[in-house]
Image (cartoon, rainbow, N blue to C red; front, top):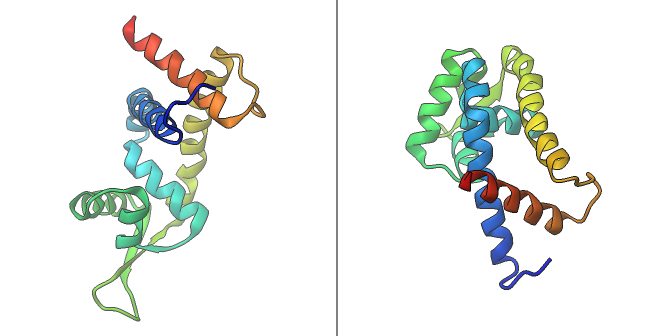
Length: 147
């Protein structure tokens, strides 16, 4: 891999891949009444357990207004619950519900199918070097977008 400003070039790869992932998976998430950010929140809660609303916003690098809207939506769907922290009355603790846990496998399937398609299309083995894999996938996405 010929990186000129490592890790800056990797950051660019991440950005291109992330945006393509969002664009490609949005219709699939919409079919299960979610958006990409909803999916990220549910996966994070499933993998790491309850979090404060502020921790979720910081971890996912989204602003306070957006995390509030996303949590409200997930609450309305019954996928998360929120309670006031016992330690700090200004903190909301977000937990994934049983209904949220049931949708997580669908989220994982969407995510994994997208990545598997990228790996297959680029003839990349899952054990290939990470940076090379990112560069190949980024190049494929750039070429695809030009077409």
